[in-house]
Image 1 (cartoon, rainbow, N blue to C red):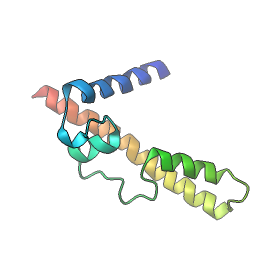
Image 2: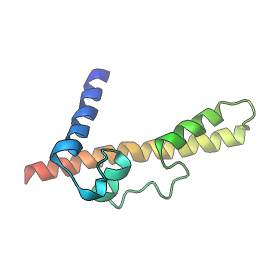
Image 3: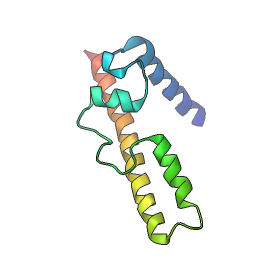
Length: 103
């Protein structure tokens, strides 16, 4: 199953590298560059955690002994919001691509 998921990711990256180019992607296949062009209504701007680097940093902070229980819970909530949007964004980008192919 994981192998199939990896193939899907690679295939989508390929689409944005070769077949579906837009100047506002700035040559990137990153979801953070593709999403605002295809689905501007979905945005990370209102989230506390806005990118993968920040998500990793916050997760690391959450597992340290000096982090309070309250801080851990807030980080957990923020990570869940970030991951939820990341997942939704991938699904919605896929739907946009399917519509484009169908027309």
